[in-house]
Image (cartoon, rainbow, N blue to C red; front, side, top):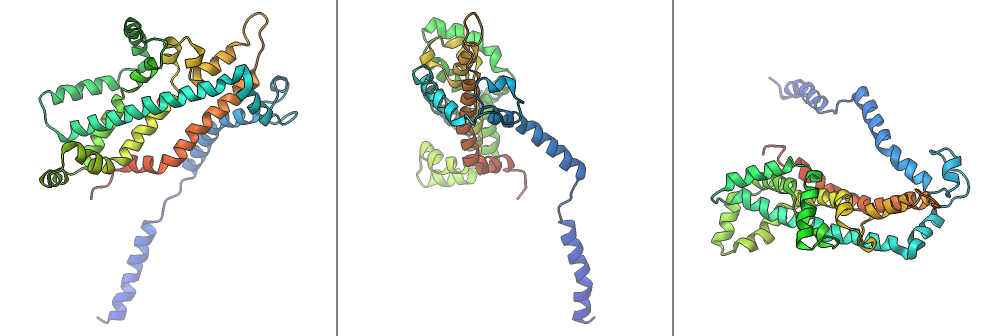
Length: 301
């Protein structure tokens, strides 16, 4: 058979294969995702619009449209100057809790998850069962026992009352364990040991680089969890100088209740908007690592 005839017969198969790779479109799915996007962005839009209004305009204007003078920059200035600039103290406390608590939780989860995945030791199955059980326990159920324990140790109303409980991340440990099982070959570790590398050196110079997408994923979860932590600081702290943003903004919101109250809802709203900026920046900077961590192991090589 001539070669030209073979080429003509091969073309339809090639075109059909490319057509099979063409992404499918679903009108129903597009509408559903559009509605979900509106639902997710609706509170953010209300927060942004409300932050541009003065205190009186918040109550006499439509919530989803601008009204009166554009007061966003004035509100921001008042947030940082109100009550002797305590908002900056709350922001610094939140960053401290996130950096030490969330960062420490990520490091501990990475080391423990890696150890569970790549080492054999007595009681490993029991440890893994305990971790799975801890994942199922909500944090609010442990808040009161944690408070009683810390009060007996004299650590309540200190930064350690927030940092130490934040170091425990059972879900992060489980995530690193599953990721390390799939991403780090045992042969690579054996080669490092033959070359004379110690276990800690192997972990920090080789394994940790391979685990980077999973570690960043755990870091994002830990940062968000610590940043939004409300109940634990509420029962642990009584000194306003130790409050994170979540408790501090609630204290400002509570000023509108009682005799002779002075509502500052415009500052509460603007402060809440400013509190979103750091966490949004973290997500934008680390989302590519997060996506890589979520998709790792989904395709068999």
